[in-house]
Amino acid sequence: MGRLRGALLPLAVFALLAAAPFLGLGAGYMLNLLARGMILGIAALSLWLLVGGGGLVSLGHAAMLGVGAYAVVVLDAAGVTEALVVLPAAVLVAALFALLTGAVAIGTSGVHFIMITLAFGQMAFFTAGALSAYGGDDGYTLYGRTTVLGARWPEDRLAFHYLCLGLLAATLGLVQVLLASRFGRVLRAAKENPQRAQALGFNPYPYRLAAYAIAGGIAGLAGLLLANATEFVAPSYLAWQRSGDLLFMVILGGLGAPHGAVLGALAIVLLEEWLAEWTEHWRLIFGPLLVLAVLFLRGGLAGLPAQLRALRRG
Image 1: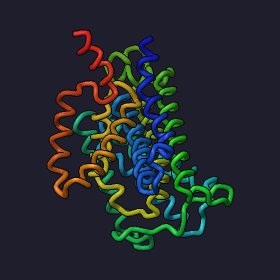
Image 2: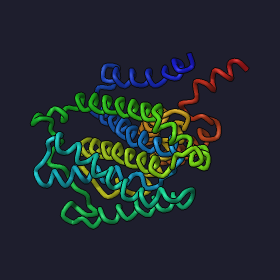
Image 3: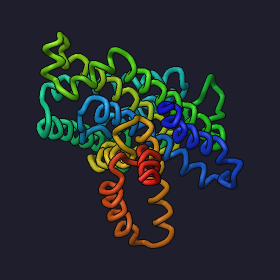
Image 4: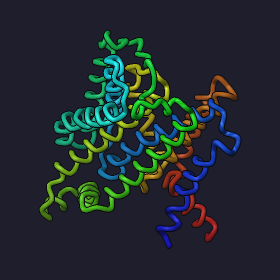
């Protein structure tokens, strides 16, 4: 019964996203906004796997998103736009970047891990800015969106909306399967008590490194989608501020369930846009709202239904 209740909220959100084009949100502007929210939801899910699943707080996670986006840029400049090539390239390059940097970072913990991931992220950021062949600091405008078997249907806003929705659902399913597996149980055990996991014969390092690489691959997928959504890639995709945004999404959504990352991403993207329509000083409202959400929504948005039920019983 508890699992069914826990599934109602994400199912309702996915149902609303699926029905959005037929609920007065079919204009190109709104579809683009929702697509951005779903893409950042995929990126936030990848970070949730590290933070919520493994207790690894990274401030360089946006670098993996940016690496995936720049894989699209490099192939686009070479005239390659086929998804059968671009998709695995973006995912594998981002996963490889995560594997190489994670091999160093995972050996540390706490503040040291945060600072090392931040350092690697900034190194990637400045490297992207130095790539003059791909726009440097000015960024790179894609010649066109990625094609699928030569077809250009991803250029259609409605088709791209459902593509993002399908990949978001698949990513959430993947994260949930990983958590329910033996791999996920060891990862969570190492998060709670690494010494106990070690005593039971499980070395946390390879499990954490594998999770880091998987999270990097998922972030690379988000980078590919973001590059196609905006048809533009810039070094700002890799900046530590973008990593901070993703971390805010994860915290706001709640660390208790992976779908919290999706809720947090959608909430922040939509709230930013709506507040910006009301006033140019929207950040003065947005900041305190986030603080209040962290203070009073202890389980995040994912835990809100349970919190409301507890209040009703009380």
